[in-house]
Image (cartoon, rainbow, N blue to C red; front, side, top):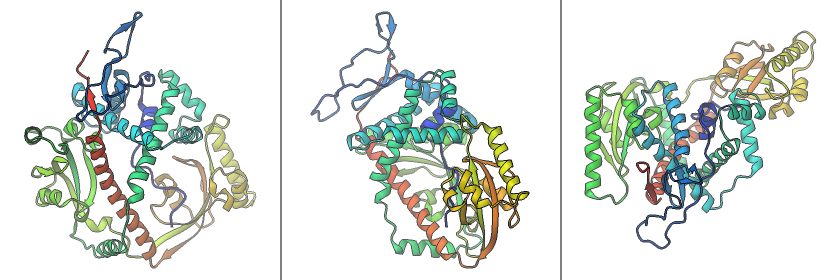
Length: 469
């Protein structure tokens, strides 16, 4: 059974990262350039305005890339550079040289722009109400307060709120495109599910799970032998740098075309069954810290480093009884009208009314909670370990039956939590099967999405102008 509170997201959307880290002014909406129609090979589009051209005494923002019929400007690239630099700094990854990182970030922007174009061309639309709701959620979860405080922060940093809204719209559009083109087409057969569950149930101590870091040097479809050889030489050069002590995360951020590049190439923990066979062969006999052999795949050349390994039973599905908690809660959020001190004061008052005044927690939840569970008196049902965000789970675990927590903060807002009862579920088979289906779906969807992205990038016309001006 899944709680109303999902686990924390694995990543942050581009717009959310933009809100948190950007400190430079946003550019205006990119003008459009019409490509030459009917060309067998891409024809260089006519430049509307040369880069770094002065018109009526004003410097025009120069063009750094053309993506199909749209441009990316230097100012847009500068904004994304600042986001990337701060992301790497937060992860304590050494920054690559600015020119190297700039090219890496530009490639990410090109892929995003191609997705947005594909979404628009195939009829994906995001209305203003959806964008407004997303921005409201981001404001509440980011800790800045409400939308008004968000706008003030953006204004202080010189960021156009209009541009920020369009970034949010693009993120939603890309997510909907992926859902339609990839995720909705992923099918999990009952046989696959049976094999996965059986394999997890049979995991014994000694079976290995691997943590791997990864650098991908991309080779397009139908690449010439010279292009393939050039990529191979670059991969071998990077491997030599790594053997000489170069930082893997820095090189991944600099050169990898994989989506994990700006996370230092980290693929996380994976069992042997979740690794491509060529990856497993490259690292299975290595010790943590060692590089695997250079791997060639249809997508390009892969450099792999074994970060660590552990007993796979630690990540297996549960085969023993699990403790469940039946809980309910009251959720309040910080807004323009109710700043954090007021929210905490209101929750403390509600707690006193339950603990000292004997009022019914469920009735107060119906009257005051802003969570959808308020219609059920705040009842979350039976919650498994890991179903809620860590802050909520830690507070809930410390409560006795019938006890009400002090105000607890989570990414969703501020809570009062009441534990009603606990039990041991002797047979978690149904839950395991549900989790197995979700795990298989996520794995297959991610693999399919990366292949879809590769094909989209290969058929996207791109003209680089980064070195002009």
